[in-house]
Amino acid sequence: MWYEFVMRWIACICIMAALGSCKEELSFIPGTGALPDCNDTPIDLNGKYWFNDDGPVTIRTDGCLDAVPDDVFTSCAENWALTQDGNDVSIVVDEYRINGRLCGDQLHLEGGWWLSVKDEQGHCWYEDDDGDDMSIQNGGNVLTFTPGDDPNDDTMTGLLLLKGSCEVDYEVTLRRTSEPSF
Image 1 (cartoon, rainbow, N blue to C red):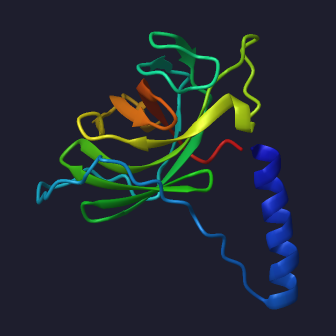
Image 2: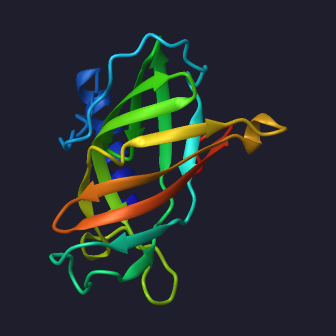
């Protein structure tokens, strides 16, 4: 997947040089996760980058390739870039867009992304067979912000309910970073 990402940017630069502009379209995967009405004063996450730790992904239903219910896999890391406008947050994860809404210290999510998992040797290849497009489901679409002693120790945690070719629970911890780690 990273190879594809790099190749897209190289192609974009070539096209931009030829045409003078470039805009890659972000994918949006609708799920049942919805954003609540909220006027609570939000925390400030504008322009912050996050990455997800290698959290456990538990299979809940049949349908995922080479997996059965109760199998547990380790997720692969992804960069999350946040842009905030008041309570509303736009999140880019690779080539996917997730919508968010901050209600105080809780980030409600809608959308989805490619959830990749580690192979038997603990490697992440970001290939078509190591993950699935997963949509965020209602009842498991909230992350809670916890400040650290240092801003780079800030975290957002929660149990996300995701659905692709099967349903999974994903215990996610997002950690703040000063810049994306590509």
